[in-house]
Amino acid sequence: MPSQSIWTLLSWGPDGWLDDIAYGAVVTVTLALATLPIGLAIGFFIALGKQSEEPSLRLAANVYTTIFRGLPELVTLFLFFFGMPILLQHLIRYFRPEATIDVNGFVAGMIVLALIFSSYASEVFLSAFRAIPKGQYEGSYALGLSNWQTMRKVILPQLLRIAFPGLENCWLSLLKDTSLVSIVGLAETLRNAGVAARVTKHSFLFYSVAALVFLVLAVLSSFATSAILRSLGKREAQR
Amino acid sequence: MSVTATIVERPPPQARGWPRSRLIGYALVGVWFAFGLGIVAYLVFAWNAEFFAKYAPAYLKGLGVTLSLVAISMVLGAVLSIPVAYGRMSKNHFLSGLAYCYVYFFRGTPLLVQTFLVYYGLGSFRPELQTVGLWWFFREAFYCGVFAFALNTAAYQAEILRGAIESVPRGQWEGAASLGLHKLQTLRKIILPQALIVALRPYGNELILMIKASAIVAIITVYDLMGQAKLAFANSFDIQAYIWVAVVYLVIVEILRHAVEWIERRITIHLHR
Image (tube, rainbow over all chains, first blue to last red; front, side, top):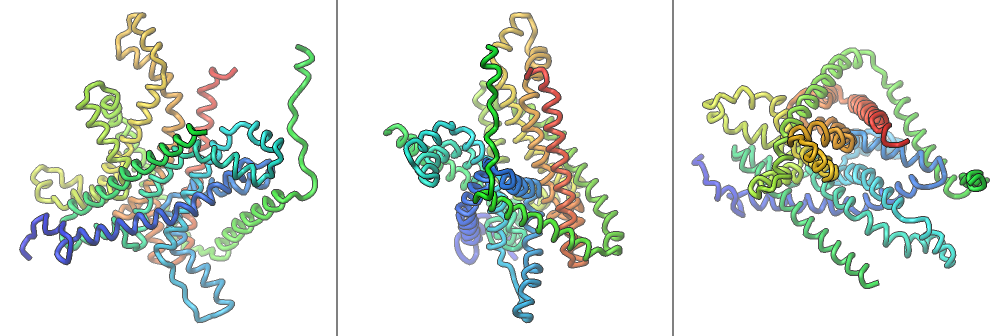
């Protein structure tokens, strides 16, 4: 095979690999964006549990974060990817003995990333909860708001603003953690770059491109978050 | 005085009965309990003396590899972080820009990509590396792991170090200067003792993150703890290979976390009275 020039390798189309890596980048972003709302919701409820007055609720929430912050991401991923089919198989055998289960890499990755993201996000939410003075709750109680109304109209708007910088960090590590899902075969950025590297023997080039994709994603998200922060700040100034 | 002293803010009385939060809390604790019991029961039922005899020594060896990998790269990273932190705090635009780019690259890209870049990427320059005489280093997956991890943790540690040094008020530098101490003495005797108290917790977190992240060297064929688990799973298709390794990691991380908290309590005794 005549050695192709770097620019052919990086072109768009059947000769080049840029389209594959771009497709991988789309999968990376999709995975991270799909995980985000689930992780935020779970993290919020875990934080609610942690600052509850009920000891059993605190205990349950603390066990959750201890486990998912203590386990390496890779171990959690492997446990789910290989363990879940076995577990489901056992369960489903009672109903349909002939059925087999195959776990989709995207779904397994989403569940695992949501577990990890939510345990870190819950810490951020918890410290934001602690930053909100008790008077806010007492004031809304005095105004006759229900618990749900207090949370939605008084606490949440302040909470999000306080938690935002911490959540931004969580988002950046979520974005980086998506690369781990390539190991269980999801065709995202790193996986496709790895395929290109193996086929063309230009490992350094393609892994650098993968690194560049992640850097660009990090820069783009910092643009996005500063735009969100600015609009949050504007709304605060208007009040 | 005596009147106010007797008014103690008591904790609110425990709610009686079964409010909704208690029901949910007990249910969730029950779920965790059942989960734990299920895992223990599974490990007991799946107890396989042969499996244990075959893989327990391998796991111990893997644990040694993991710990030495993390220890070596933490120390190398600490050494490397000093010039990077110096660059970050320098007034020279070129130096600070260079250090900023270094930190941004290593914090902005996944460690897995960096590890691949070193192991497969630099490995593809075999003839060049052989002429320079560095091939023996980049041939070994373990050394490549150490190399990538040291570079990565240096970026994080540089930021920790910078944050800690900048947290010490300026007056301390000025006071030391007025006492006639030169820069290095000031740093060693005045600034660092105060900065390291601030830095202890982030350093502890970084150590824990490194232990967790070290599992990924299993992907580049290093037989660390995770690598041994992968091997055991590939040979036996027994999910307990991964359950055991999860337990070991969890225990290490919890021990470290509590150790850091204990040290922090010890060294800040003079701060709260």
